[in-house]
Amino acid sequence: MSMMTMGIQGQLLEVTVVGCQKLKDTEWFSRQDPYVVLEYSGARHQTRTCTDGGKNAVFQEKFMFTLLEGLRDLKVAVWNSNTLSTDDFIGNATVQLQKVLSQGYDDCSWTLQTKTGRYAGEVRLILHYAGAKNQHHVSAPSAPPYAPQVPHYSAPPSPSPYSSPPYSGPSLYPQVQYSQPQSAYPPASAYPPQPYAYPPPPGPSAYPPAPSAYPPPPPSSTYPPPPYPPQPSPYYPQGPYPGQYPPPPY
Image (tube, rainbow, N blue to C red):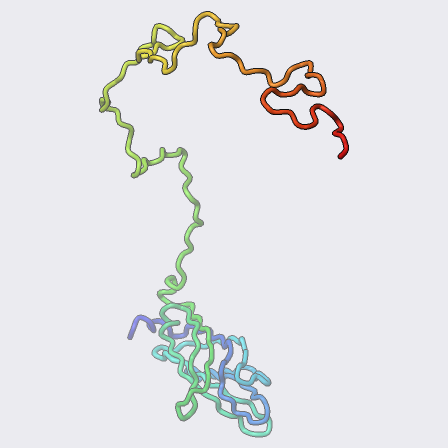
């Protein structure tokens, strides 16, 4: 005899019928009214009828069975309730009890089959067994609440891998000593003075300017003006009417 079923004689098994899904529809003109039947070791329990439950029925009913040593399966069947005729068989399944007897808990959906072995829907059952030997393995102990550890000091930042430490050895370049010049201003020129490109201006002033060797041009006009009429020019001959204005008529 295995350890899973040792000592189950007379212990209680709690079965909760949660509901059915995707049931085979046995009605033609209306919605079917399914109910569930449980059988174990000659004991039989039946849920209420889910009126107009159709293909998806909800029950949420709990039943207790007394376990029998060596019997490790539970029979479940789903029927459609009829008022004027015999109830219609929808499907059945065999529920294995190995898991609930070893761990104390089982929540699973079981596939229903017709009499010809075809798929007829699913039924969901929740099983509880308080006398399981390994019941303490069902739920893991809760971990303590996480509390981050805050350090009491701040560590210095780690040096960056991309920056090198400052060089503390001897300098690779000669040290240049700078001396302060004697005269602060103006600084002495390091180059000799350049000669001027133009002749220097004369020393004493030459004003008024010296007389030019050329005679100045004659004035453009004389003042006062010459008398009128003008005098005959010695370079051009006189006309037939010298100095008369207006000229005589022809």
